[in-house]
Length: 196
Image (cartoon, rainbow, N blue to C red):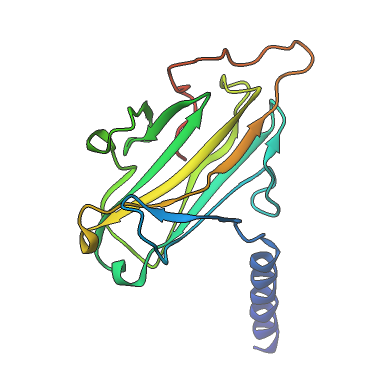
């Protein structure tokens, strides 16, 4: 019985040590609203090549990375129905993440904005993985910087959208040996890069 108790305690210590070892997602500055009002919502995002132990902004062509993001919604929006939006800017082209996990060009019109996570009951913390273990270079995205933005809305504030005023910037280096990278002005998101 004592051995079993010691095993349980050792297991709990190991689990707690692992969770403490993971780095905190960096906070994205300048939370904003479409109307220009202030917000207490907070936005976080980070890219990691070591499963969240550390976060970085620059990665090699063939380096597999994870991109994780989180929204802390305003307290008055908790347990209300809302939508979560994920936007990626690549070479001045805006892509929105669809519910299916695919990305589609967004024309910057709010009427055409589609939610990545539609009609969900918002929790105080909404955390999700954008990509899991993806090497962007071989997928066709390199020699570039991606800018990722988060946004959400709630029926508690009809017509308002709350968003990360600053982006999570992720730079993917080119393949130095051959100099090949993604062509500039690309108008289609690589089909191999989907939400995990």
